[in-house]
Length: 145
Image (cartoon, rainbow, N blue to C red; front, side):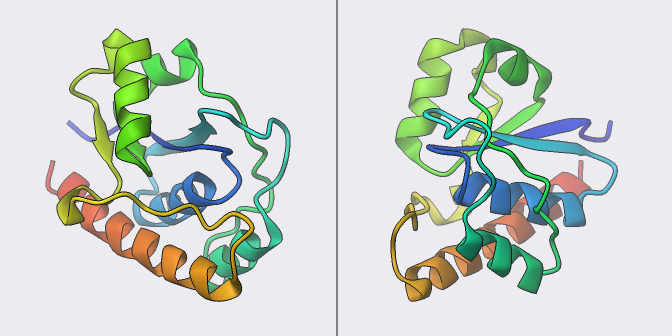
């Protein structure tokens, strides 16, 4: 059975999760992909740095607006990918229905994806490259389902 829905999660939903969302949409066109934040900057677009990096990677996330994670969004996602282990743990403890469906975006690397917010262009670039690598890893796994 094909994956129907996937949510990416970070803190503010303006850097890491929107970029991951955009790149996953490119790789998984038949899957509904969306993102949210644990402390979302509700209604804000992705940061200019992330918009530019996404565009350079072929993903148009210009319509993105940050949204707060909610029970509805968690329940709607068959797979949830978080930027950090602490985010995974928070979701699992606050939404028991999510258990078994929440994983780190950088699961294969066993690490968190650092938050580039208010960091240098070089930090944004390295974070974007890490996210792109992890999206590729997940897309390959999901394609095999």
